[in-house]
Image 1 (cartoon, rainbow, N blue to C red):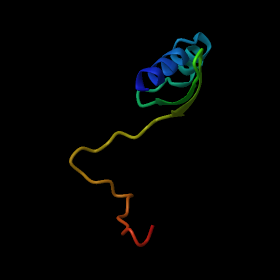
Image 2 (cartoon, helix red, strand yellow; image 1 turned 30 degrees about the vertical axis):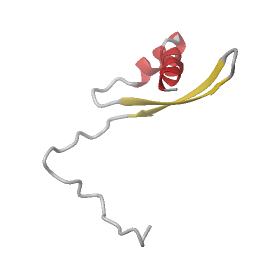
Image 3 (cartoon, rainbow, N blue to C red; image 1 turned 45 degrees about the horizontal axis):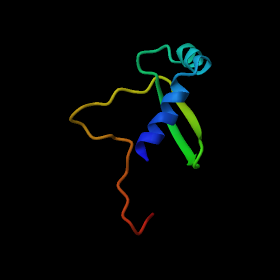
Image 4 (cartoon, rainbow, N blue to C red; image 1 turned 90 degrees about the vertical axis):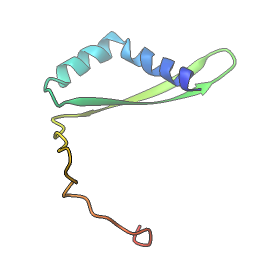
Length: 78
């Protein structure tokens, strides 16, 4: 199943229009794109859908230091 999902994601990455648009949007060194795909597997063909999320100017992680903006919640509070 992972092989088929990888094929669907690879097909989205080979689309020239998608690649051009991402190249226009992701110009900074800390810009990122994440691909989330799903597919339906039939006997004769595969049908997939991918969503590409872009995040611009992702802050760099500080190594060795915890994130100050997170709070620890107990299971009862969730």
